[in-house]
Length: 322
Image (cartoon, rainbow, N blue to C red; front, side):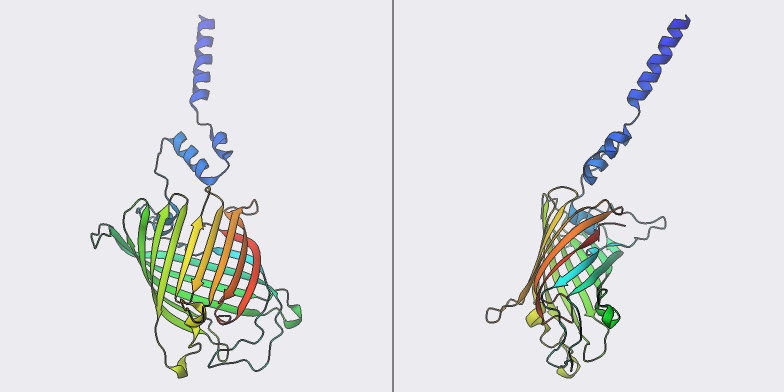
C-alpha cells in the first residue's frame, strides 16, 4: 500500500510539473512579438497581432486608459538621444527678413535629442461618416534640441530648440490592410527666440496612412497660414521645408525598423527637399532602448536651418515605449 501511495504522489508531482507554465521558454524568445505570443499562449489569452499603425493611433480601441478612464501620455514621433555630426554647420543663420551680423563659432559635432508625446482627448467609437468607422482627437507635442555639448570654448550653448504643439483628428477606416487612417491636424512650430534668430509658422495638414504586412506609409501635405511680410520671420519657408512629405516604415521583424522620410517643395523650377534614413535595433543598455543610426541630407533639419543645406550622420538611442 505504501508503495502504491508513493507511486501515486510521484505521478501527481510529475503531472503538475508538466502542466506548469514554462516561463523560461518565453523569456528566451528572440524578439518582443514572439515573447508576447508565447506568454499569451501560456496564459490562455489569444489576441490578434496589432499592426504598427493600429498601435500608434489605437485604431482598434484597445489602448490602455488609466483607472479613471483617462488616456495616458504615449509616444508620438521618435524619442531619441543622438550624437550628431554635420558636414556644414550653420554659423550665420539668415532669412529674407532677418540676418545675423557676425558668424558664431559653432562646431560640427553636437548632441541632438527629441521628445515627442501625444494623448487622446476625445473620441467617437462608433462612427459612420463617408466610410470612416471611428474618430479620435489627440493633443501632441514635439521638442527637438541641438546642444553644442562638445563646444567647451563657447560654454556649450544650445544652438537651436524647436517646439511643436499639435491638435490631430484621426478618422479610422476599420480596414485590416490598405488605407487605415486619415489625420487632419493643426501645427504651430517655433523656436521661441528673438530676432534675428526667431523662426515660426502655423499650418494645417492632411495625412493618410496605409499598411500592408510589415510595411506602412504615411503621406502628408500642408497649407501654411499666411502672415504679413513685416511679421513673418521666414516668408520663404515652404520653398525649403516644402509642401509635402512621405514617410515609409519597414519592420522585417518585431524589433528592427527602417524608416525613410522624403520631403519636397513640389517645385519643378527650383526643386528642394530633404531625405532622412533611420535604422534601429534593440540595445542591451536600457529597457526599451534601441540603437539607432541616421543619415540625412537636404534643407530643414531644424527651423533655424530651414534654408540651409547640409548632410549629417547621427548615432544614439531611440526609446520605443515608456
